[in-house]
Length: 109
Image (cartoon, rainbow, N blue to C red; front, side):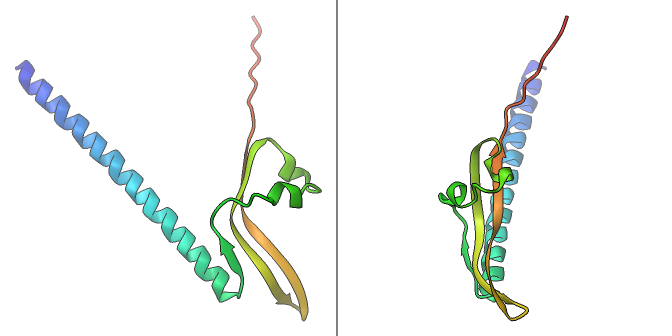
């Protein structure tokens, strides 16, 4: 009787591991598709696309307080170039930006 529970436990664990692997593979597939879509969008507008981190972002945008918050800041998936709006040439730089903050918890007795 115990052997049945052991077998069921092993099968359940194996199924769970397979589900986790499948979910990770699907997430990676969606990530790659998003990058391909952003690349195609940028190209359709005659712009450039860089999926990696932008190492110059902190230095270029120090005058914006929001880009100086937290730590471990990263800009990535950047679409950049020049577009024409109302007969004016406009420099465009858009993408994803993340940063981390530390949460502080205070307790009182």
